[in-house]
Image (tube, rainbow, N blue to C red; front, side, top):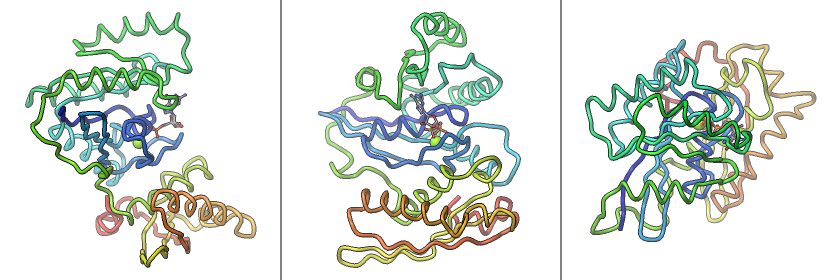
Length: 296
Ligand SMILES: Nc1nc2c(ncn2[C@@H]2O[C@H](COP(=O)(O)OP(=O)(O)O)[C@@H](O)[C@H]2O)c(=O)[nH]1
Ligand SMILES: [Mg+2]
């Protein structure tokens, strides 16, 4: 059986978490069109015929401003040594920019202290790029460094993912025995996933600076026979943000709650009763104690 671990790095919003979900074939990481959606390392296990791939999704590499962002970048850099193989992901819609160069610097630094089985360049979102534009782009990326493979993919539509898996496995060693149980998909707790599902819905329904200002604190998660009772608090930074989350006559909060509850029921396979609160906690992004409590 083939076995190995890979880490996905890239600037925010290139589609790292979407690829993790595609490889694990289950939604274990939250996705949004806002940068910096992923705040922690997320581990998923992809199970294939005669192979297991441990996939490590990371927060996007970017220049940090808050304590939270410093932790996010740290988390990504700390994850690099845990992997056998690196996937550097870039957006095929955009020529490599300053953000991608910053990512490359970090990757080069990591390769100095450790040998990797492979360093793949994944050009994601090819569903949005014409073939005529893709080829010169690949040539441009080829000149950046020596890549083990350059693979154009669409994580969202599943394009070329089977090929990517096949290529990846060819770089990995044979193991005597399987390391993870067949039903092990992620190391995240249900509590953490529940909080993340709520945050994803908040991201979907808000704009501008709000997504960055939001965190979800899980107050209670009680599992009984075939149902779970979840109580959580959505934290915002300013009192002006609270009514935005709640919406007219509580409508937005209601939508967020309903969508999050359905996701939880789908993933956890039990009926969920969800109680949501909204609270103002100024500067939570720089509050060390609160960051720990939030699991960051
Ligand atoms: N068109 C297109 N959009 C994608 C693809 N992969 C991800 N996205 C979108 O890009 C945005 C960021 O995705 P996400 O996985 O959260 O990116 P991350 O920040 O790198 O983890 C979301 O709106 C995704 O739906 C893709 O292959 N094609
Ligand atoms: Mg992500």
